[in-house]
Image 1 (tube, rainbow, N blue to C red):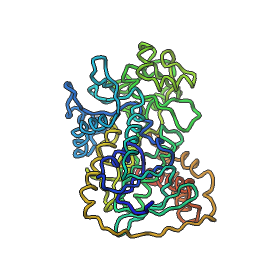
Image 2 (cartoon, one colour):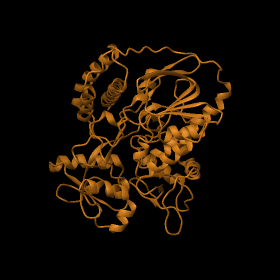
Image 3 (cartoon, one colour):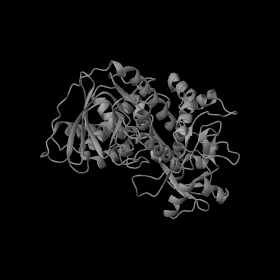
Image 4 (cartoon, helix red, strand yellow):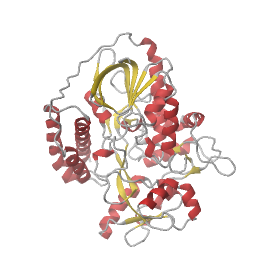
Length: 489
């Protein structure tokens, strides 16, 4: 086992796996995943992947315009154009790798509709598209002889060196220092910095923190998308998502009185973009004095519902709700990050040799609100472009590897219990759907004190410490950015 690689990729979701697939076969690649393979936000993506591919009634200009409208026209024009124009090649590529999308009886692909889309352009595998993509990409990566996969391996620290990067990892009780010429952050989102999220357990913002510590620009971290229809069981931190595609197929949103209410807030009704619907629910909560909301698709054919949404149907049955008959309780919760590590059109950061792709990156394609099902597409398009850019530079990479020595103290005390719980409460209270300006300012000083204590004291370097520090760093960056925006408003 070597400790020297051409490329280290942190993250085994769509962005990390697809980057490994598209890098030259001669490149020595180390792929790190914090927990077990398959645990990532990609695997939780239900709705699908948007793109104009073999679609006679659709055009890339329409997809582009829908993306702008959803993003409040705050999107990056260059990267949006790349996203929609290059969608077809990446959809074709993953199909060639074995990804199966649902088809109609005539053999054509079944494309669904979600909020903000003017055409049916969303390719899906039932209601578990992300899991299908992750499964097929991983199966292909596991056949590549140039890729070493390290499962259950925590990234503890990353430092820039003269020849690239040095990283400290922890697998079980064993620390290991590895080196590379290039580094791709594909570490996903930050959902676990909130009390309630649709994100997987590993989404704590580690990669964003490491990039920030190396001097990478972080942009738009306060641009957080709250999904309007998470299953509301009021108990579990990880909220089961009820895909926007359910509303795309005709479901109604109902308030505590069992009435549709979206007509009060937007002419697009239930198919308004996610931020509009989430804001409407919070405003309706204030109007009615109740946080009881429901999603109802019982007026549709039961066999169609079971066939189209088998995973959602099955999971809800376990919770005591029949999607074909019952109104299902829903409420907004943290879902997606539009900002992150700022990159250009080739996924390059301002730190030489450092790239970022997927949810941890900020390409600017989403603007102020992500259009549904653009996230899987973004992960594919820009991780491929990162791989291509690295491929062009590999021949000029130095042969030697500069090394950084990391200090580890196994006798150091563990990080105090409860820090992450406190930080999650702070963000939920300060910055949820409609931000609380007073709480944002009040809680910022608390976050600064927590982050300072984590940085200045000697704690044992393990998952608890890394995730607590990352959570504090994300809270600091989010609230700081929010205060700057509030001051300029």
